[in-house]
Image (cartoon, helix red, strand yellow):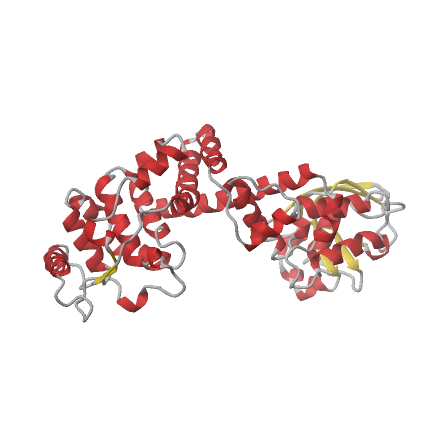
Amino acid sequence: MREDFLHYVWQHQYFDKADLRTTSGEEIQVLRPGQRNADAGPDFLNARLRLGEVEWNGAVEIHLRASDWQRHRHQTDAKYDQVVLHVVHTADADIYRTNGSLIPALALAPRLAPDLLGRYEALVQAPAAAPLPCAPLLPQVPQVVRTMMTERALLERIEQKADMLAELHAHLEHDWEATAYHALMAAFGFQKNSEPLARLAKAVPLPVVRRHRHDARQLEALLFGQAGFLVGDEATAGDDYLADLRQEHEFLRHKYSLGPSALAAHEWNYLRLRPANFPAVRLGQLVGLLHRRPALFDALLTAGSVAALTEFFGSAPAPAYWQTHFRPGRPGKVPGLGKSSIALLITNVVVPLRVAYARQVGQPALVESSVALLSELPVEHNQYTDLYQNLGFEHRTAADSQGLLAMHKGYCQPRRCLHCAIGGRLLGGGAKSLINR
């Protein structure tokens, strides 16, 4: 058993409350269990309890064993002096405040329904190989609960991404255009090369890019040179185009006091990547975008549909050389930015960027319209989304895909069943007939 199970039981009052008494025999009435505290200090704040003839307003602390109070060193922490009830599974010790006064205790072990505990253990103690602990019990869960949980997980996923972009925005001195630039640079790495592209954005900051946006050759020389793709080697010997870019890069790096390059060849990842995803290909596409789209943030903010965003990304091709070379000095026909890649950019950059901006300026309608873009995108298929789809979860658009991925990563994989609406339905449904509420 984990402590979060007792948190869940106390929060929802899923235990037998008949003749409820402290370990010393004093009668207990729970008038308000309190609010869960996510910060340092007692587990539940602003609880309201009647102990004997006295009504108390204070905190509730929860442990598996009463002696955990000493193990967690609460006996020396004045924050815990506000605790008016110590809720435990097993009362194996008396607990005192820093002033020496005894804290009343409630032992839950004899008051928990075996069926409730059994359901909990079946969920959170499922084998690690079981990707979805509640799969055998899902027929008991109405579709509306599954849909509600998927939507909740989707919004949490978007909020988390928006929070990261809000932090980036603050770091960039509250410049939304710079935020869009850094976010897109990292996103064009499509996971494998996101980190080196994020470093490249720092090495070639937006003010420098802005000065050369009008000149595709200079922009290309700046970014490819700082990325380390213009270093001469056997493959590029005799390539006049790259030699010309190398010369331009030398001039620009001296002008802006830049190093020879921000990254080395070995820092770019190629393992298990199709040639269309090679970093030089993606960087070429970024050069085309930065050259032809001078106002990134405004365009991403005002686009009213997925079709408009697809046109924004798809109609800014890479320079001609990078349409015919997968790597410097190595020719081959390179496809343009595909629809699936554009969908990922909309999902991972456009939507959270717009949500972060909308929260800051107080435009809830923009949050809603931005999230709605995901419903215009096609579904994503992978081992996780297919698993949920096979178990009867709705899976029609990218909004569903993102919600299912968020549910897997945030709830199912870490076994946070007690925080999930589906797990709550299974546990609560089984408890209602077995406890006196």
